[in-house]
Amino acid sequence: MDISVQTGRDWRPYEITAERPGAPQLADRLTEWGPDGLTELLLRHKALVFRGFGVLPDALGGLLDRLLPNRLPYVHGNSPRSRVGDNIYTSTEYPQQVTISMHNELNYARRWPDRLAFYCEKAAEKGGATPVLDGALWLDVIDPEVREAFAGGIRYVQNLHDGYGFGKSWQDTFETTDRAHVEAFLADAHAEWEWHAEGLRVTQLRAATTVHPVTGTEVWFNQADQWHPAGLGDQASADLYDILEPDQFPQYVTFADGSPIPDAYVEHVRDRGLEHAVNVTWRAGDLLLIDNVLTAHGRRSFEGTRRVLVAMSG
Image 1 (cartoon, one colour):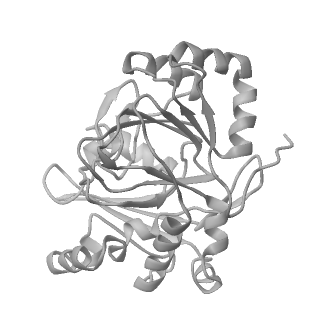
Image 2: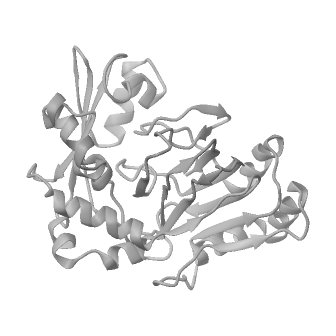
């Protein structure tokens, strides 16, 4: 497929606005494009905002069936969220005063979703935008010294408790209580694992970048800044080091050879991502569809009550 992909520092998501409110009008648009037309539109623009259609919660499932063929469960996800429907989840349930830095969903895993769809059921009174970022631009604005340091890859470590402790349990992470099922999943993911009295330790070696399978675009594609204590901020990082040794953190990251990643590199990657991201502000009933390789996403802090749901496909 010959796709002319929009990129560069002036990139923004492509906004599709309603002539009148109503989910049927959006369904009509999707029918007009067909699956191939929607795929081409998404590859070209990397992110699509469906604005003003006023989609109600009871119409969401049917639209997601069209936007996300082969909807996936959030298995091996590291962020806290709740299932609210058929492979539909709340967006990350971190405290509202926290800004979630840019990332691609599950990019630390061997397999990741192709697409994500976000749905705004209720917009926050203040803030709460979903920033999105051109992954090729993110790679380009990272200093060459930092890119070179990450060229050898990344080692991710998860310490998943057995029901009590910091972070998520292995049961919540893999949505099962069957150890054999977890082991089969991890073997397929080419991960290493070890059961112990407190739970499960998982280690994975991954690349820092990837190439989109259709467009051939290389993008920054890792969560080193989210798995590293320096990405939490000075006080949160210091508090974590006071409680645990690094190899006992719920999640931790090093270079692939086990050597530490400097705090300054982590902060640089995080800050460049947030600096170049474009905010998608929410109104109730809006939808956002992104290509999960070409586009990173995050969350701005907010005040009041915010309910944004997410689903993914592969």
